[in-house]
Image (tube, rainbow, N blue to C red):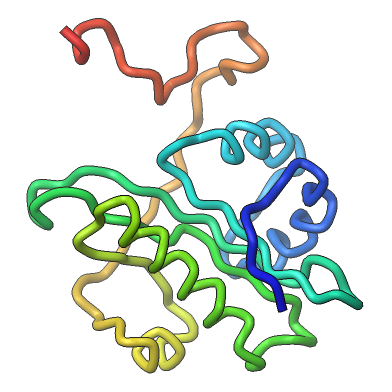
Length: 161
């Protein structure tokens, strides 16, 4: 088993795994627009698990950000998926451990994630349930990629002054 950073060539192997995420409705077009920027983002950890005879069988996406409550940098695991036929074989654990190593390297004080499922998996890995997590779908403005505008995550001039 090899856990490594994702590369452009992993795109078509990751998409079916994205479809395995519960309670989400991913769109292929949004996936295509996001794949490259996520590979290049310095505050993002995008890893895949690969088996020599099967190729990519899992992936993890995490990011880091600053907070007041956690006294600095925290990392948040956004997505973890493993092929259904290979679950409960340690692949998710290896992906999570690789994200924890990355978090330590970037100076994070905490790693967090939201999961309504697999609670036992996360607790067995040393995670403690600390708060609920709520989401709400909102209508996004026109995509920067399609409108030629600035990315919504780019800092504004006011924020950098």
